[in-house]
Length: 366
Image (cartoon, rainbow, N blue to C red; front, side, top):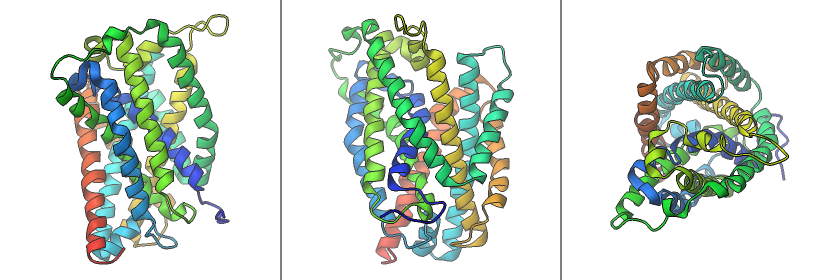
């Protein structure tokens, strides 16, 4: 049965929101950050992520099943560690997620300007997206879930079109056979994609606004689908350009779709793809602000307290810091995308959060 509270996501909405929100981090890492290690085997790296993604999703769902009414990940922190340490951990998460949201804002604006309007100021598009994202964070989470229900089918259709019509440009020799001794690189190439998928763990902070019941499938299925999508992205892009040229591009997927034409329907489809990409950026930014403001509310006012409007405004300074500090130059933006942000997010989602939940299990608090 569904939850009749006014601002509660269904498990289906949670799954679709997770899938849509992680599209942008996925495209940034697959294949751009993966191909330098994996080369021609980058598609195999992405395929190898699928079992790990499913396991991660099931584990997150398993721990979140321990939540009580009105509890999200921040409240679980307080239960596992005690009030003060739990609130401190929630504050750390809120600060990092806000900073990372600033990077996502800047990265999305830079990609939009570079790909579509190269003569336009980045701050214009960044400012518009910030207003939209802040509005989404101040509004109901359920509204983001409903947006995801509308956007997800369109995103799926666009990707299907792109993959179908890029087939004539692909060359098998760019993907197979793999050079001798490439398996180690293939395994290393999976790490950036796993890191991008691990961002999904942050949605656990919204667990107090998700309907009751097991959440394993709501996390595992979209992560599994995203890993499969990553494999298709890697195969299509590297199959078209080869690993060497792909590694040199900032946005290889977009460069690839600019050459796609659909006879008698659309001369070029990049405008359609960009529109969907902007929608995915909006869902990502709105979700990250919902996450950071929820975690900050727990940190400042205690477990179960919700002063969302104030928390959203307090999250904006670290967000703007992330937008400015991550990208003084194009090289700094690329380095942040491939080093700083992935490392920080991995420390949070693969070390800190699991560590706290394990401590709670040992202390028999979960």
